[in-house]
Amino acid sequence: LGKQAKADEVAVTALIGALKDSEIRVRATAAWALGKIQHPVEKVVPALIEALNDGDWTVRYNASICLTWLGQPAIPALERAIKDPRIFVRLYGADTLFRTDPSKVELVTPIAIGLLGNEQEGVRAMAAQTIGLIGEPAAAAVPELIRLLQDKTQAVQMNAVAALGAMGRSAGVAIPQLAKLLSADIKAALRVAAADTLSRIGESPELWVSAV
Image (cartoon, rainbow, N blue to C red):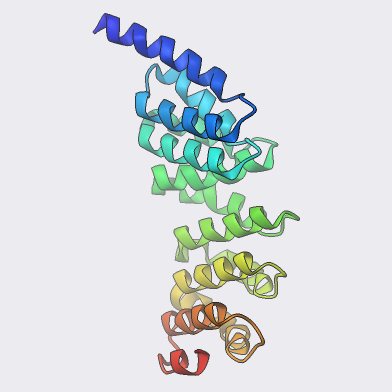
């Protein structure tokens, strides 16, 4: 056991160094491998938290997934991450914290809502995705999600539509704006998503037909 622990520590040290490699694939693989090894936790967790600020989404995604694998030992660091001044650390920290421990919803929700208006489209899209994951407890986000239905980026619009659907009847105020999407000059996928969300909120499933 002692030899294995020592081997893990040596491997972790090398992988932490690889997180700073110039190649995205190397950094992403290193993050994934750290999540597989997991020990020593006191080294793995801070390294993965730092990787949430990587310039590439695949590295951030891998770090986030691996932090959820770590579970309880990662929670204190994730609670600190949602207060980090760096946007991606807050964003991915909030999403990861909720996925790891849904009871932290009251901590996560205001962070995600606050990022819905960020100037970066990728941040807006993921913040909306996190709100959709939370669902009805994040109903305070409905007004901002309605605004995002007019976003210039389709990924943001799609995630906003899906998040409203996750709210169910709590998103009833969004019905007029969602209905407008059914006849808008937009891609069919967005119209169908709007129809699906309307049916989740409580409108007639027949809207599916008119959206296609």
